[in-house]
Amino acid sequence: MLRTLTVWNFALLEHVKIEFGAGLNILTGETGAGKSILIDALGAVLGSRLAAAAIRSGCEWLRVEAVFDLEGQAALKALLEEQAIPVEDDELIITRQVSHKGKNSVLLNGCRVTLTLLKELGAHLVDIHGQHDNLALLRPENQLVLLDSADAQIEKQRGVYQKSFAAWNDCKKRLKAKEEEAKSTTERLDLLHWQEKEIEEAALKDGEDERIEAEIRKLSNAEKISGFVEESYTLLNGELGGKALNVLAALSKVKKNLESLSRFGSELDNACKMVENAYCDLQEASYEIRDYGSDMEFDQHRLDALENRMSVIDKLCRKYGATATDVLAHLAKVKDELQRIENYDADVEDLKVALRQSEIALKDEAKKLTKLRAAAAKELSSRIGEQVRELGMAKARFSIALRAADYGATGADDIVMLFSANAGEKEQPLQDVASGGELSRVALAVKAVSAANDDSPPSMVFDEIDTGIGGKTARMVAERIATVALHRQVLCITHLPQIACMADAHLYIHKETQGERTLTEVHLLTEGERINEIARMASGSDITAAALDNAREMVDNARIKRAKISRR
Image (cartoon, rainbow, N blue to C red; front, side):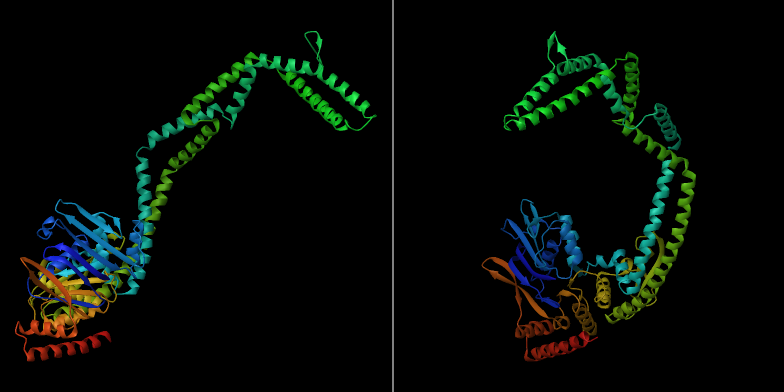
């Protein structure tokens, strides 16, 4: 709901702040006072085109700011969250500024956004209807929403249909992908069979490359290894260069000496244990060194064979993976793909069967949805048609027709609103034959019937849709607008007292001249001021006692009528 609209330097509006309430907000004033400028300003903050020419003469910029209450608007708040726009206390502040230099700035709760996003959000906030601005009513998707919201069973069945549609669509996509895949099957098969043969002929084993590399390093350095082994073992157990260097024998002697010393005191018992442990560890090490050396035998043939094998593995790794394990993993993928390709015919047939079955289910659910929509369309056509005729078009006919369409996400139906304004004329698509005024009244009739059920924005604007009507028709229009205002916030610009007297809040727009400048002011009328304004609207500039009495009677009757409407 729109709480406030503040405008700076917009045409005749120097600085105006308007507070709006729930229900019906009426805006009246003399022709040329600037009523439509306010609607233009609201449209600007919702994403409409805004040229620098709209900037007030003598000013460098214009700015429009609107504050909206987002209570109950979960879809809009989710959209704002997706765009990382913070929302606190269900409040959205939109600010748009344009300078003479053409700089266009749009802020949502302080975050800079694009005009495209602003337009998208604006469609969730306010629905504007005027003599030439009923495009929302003409959009097929909105007509479908109108019809589907008329019956809860339709919404339920549409959900069932959409699951069937998703399954059918998935089968179509998978079959198409399989058929596309078949176009390059022959060439792909040759490649896969070649890869399979090349890898299998190598008879790779998992981790084989690591084991061979380790053995090659050992054989390539056999001489060095033997030297290190011999020297190490000799140091532990033998002589080196004619000198006795038997470490183990020396440790054994130290051990015996320490054991002998233990007879004279226990101070070296710990040292004795350490020497004993060292002796055992070194003796064990000498055995391992000896055994390693005894197994060490240089074999040139073995080395050549290992290097040749490693060359084969390296070649495969360059093609299919970094290691032998990776190459084997690639082989598994090749075998899997070969199996899928070789099972192509069976897979395609299975997909075709699944597609036929899903299409049968989809057709059945689509028929159920169409049947429910047809019943709702008949009922809705009757109710809207009655409203249209009561809005001064006694000979008009209105109907909602369903036409078969391809399966889509919302069903297999196209919606067409048909209209005829005159007796004897054939009903044709609404957008082709209705004038601006007729469209406005049809839109009002639709809203009067559906306001409690449809999913339209919480705020609506009717901009002089009463042009060219009066008398009983004006009263009917007023009652329909009041009906809509029970469920939506309505801003209505009007010249008719029959509509103005239905207001929850009445705003008066007038021009003032200050020096050599003209500016527009907006004033919330008190009860007395409201009676005066309705009298002026009904009788012209001369407000007589009789005109005031008539205005009071109109307001009293309007209260009674609104009370009856609210009890329906």
